[in-house]
Picture 1 (spheres, rainbow, N blue to C red):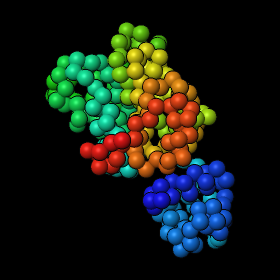
Picture 2 (cartoon, rainbow, N blue to C red):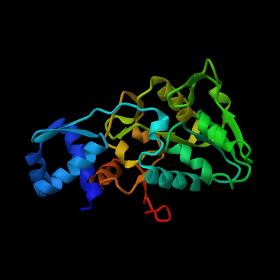
Picture 3 (cartoon, helix red, strand yellow):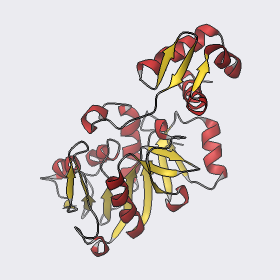
Picture 4 (cartoon, rainbow, N blue to C red):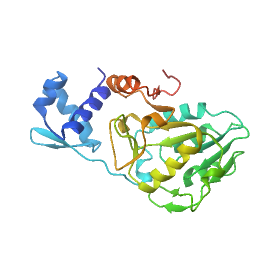
Length: 258
């Protein structure tokens, strides 16, 4: 088992049990105490767990500012974004969600012809200014922390949009609770986009899986595909596929996919 895969499994185990002794982890994963300490040190540096004498406890996630998240797991986000952009055809109308993963799509769309991008992301809109891409930004309230626009039918007529493909972000992805987000306003906007889009893709790196945050956006069976990175543990892949969820797994070497 690769180190990154084991660390993801350790994080899932700690998330499930909240507080875990180190000796329990050595027995669960059949590795030495030295190996567990190295894994725990890495996860603690990433602020995913908190160490205490003889054990660890899970840190419940909170949403940080988008600027602070832009460089987190950047190779994975770029690989996922490139895979998303490869699904876009010339002449289509697509939606790009606000988020650090979908934001990376813009660099891979510039050569597309007769493309229309609808977005609620101010950074996405700014990146496409001066390109040949038509940009429509939804109307509504600016959410400063995400540099996004949240909206509803009172502020913006979603039923006037004809979206071929929507690329949605997520803060949490699980079989039980589906796609989830920290913000009620973001969740409402995403629900409306999902309802009117012909095809819906979720762009989420592996750290978002088996995690539920405050607000459910939709069940996993309401999206057509989830695109994620190669660090997703095999048992998680099998769990989702057994439930009929279509996954596309991309390597951080963005030339290779499986």
